[in-house]
Length: 162
Image 1 (tube, rainbow, N blue to C red):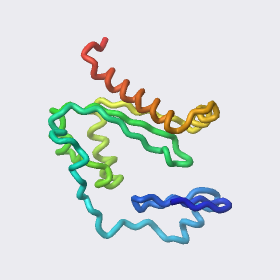
Image 2: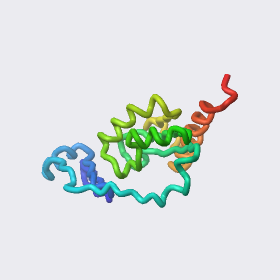
Image 3: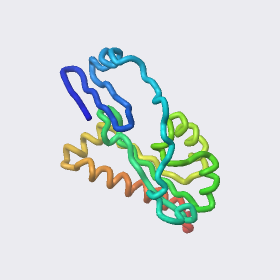
């Protein structure tokens, strides 16, 4: 949900986070008090979103952030996880990000980045605007970034590397 008025844009997310933007952003945010953590947070995540035997498979995947942001760049990350690494990742605390706090995610990321083949692509705002001016929509940009990130990861795992 989003609300706009002169010098201010307020965006509320389903996660419970609220973002204040614009010249009057800090002033408006101050009226609402300081951020607080929810009293309880359910960490139950449905396992039905994963196919049967998922942990026994080699997996490649990608995801993006920044597609709803006004100021930030669009970022796509992809990674490859060999089934042999699944127990280690579970031991390190890897799980659905919706069941984790931002500090938990940052701490685990420091541990998995060196051991998981990955690709991280960033589309800065000026390039985004340039592509949009040429007629490309956000869906097309995301598709290109996802394809490129997945291609990069697969190249890193190719048995025919030179």
